[in-house]
Length: 265
Image (cartoon, rainbow, N blue to C red):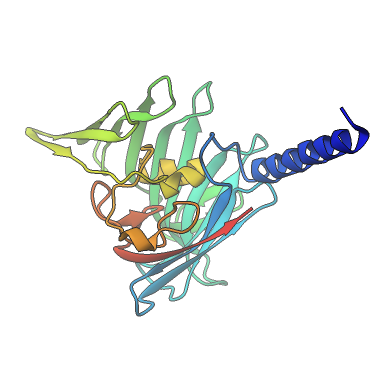
């Protein structure tokens, strides 16, 4: 190989390595998934709600800030342990309000997968976690449990919704394309089976495992309504209707018609 060819080859290798490192700074992306972050999700064409997302140096989300904050519309904060695992996800009001509206606290299995999600409602923000309110009450709104398959996709979830035992169980079945083919829900004696359709683009929630978990969405493609012209050059939806199977939401926040902005490397 000629010297200048060798130099060029080494340069390309170095550039590719740097790009990979920059992407891995966010988190480990699977092949075919763009090295992008979701930085804003805006509700509706009239700015009915706007979510600004900030990430830390490791590429993990640390805050979701709304344009208009109030009861039922809190900002959200994230906490992580020394392993970089999300330990807490909670909704707060504008400082110096000391109360949280909702607080999720997580327990992991040996494979670093969340298996228990305890949800508390309306208490005081503590340095180590949720604290009781001034009446000494710490309300448990829900306890969820999760099971996963060998691909670390959620295959079962349970919810108590404040009761002493499981109220609702959901079973997730995936097809050969890696999309959610069927969602079976059992609540008491009632059962519902739902089926879904997907596009052929990269699921925008795959950009970070936290977005997958918070929406219980591990599909490879998007189950949403997007016009062909509303994908960006990376195949990610920019204007979309967030409908089934997740009832119109992002990171547990109810949304329908949205405009999504990304930062890509």
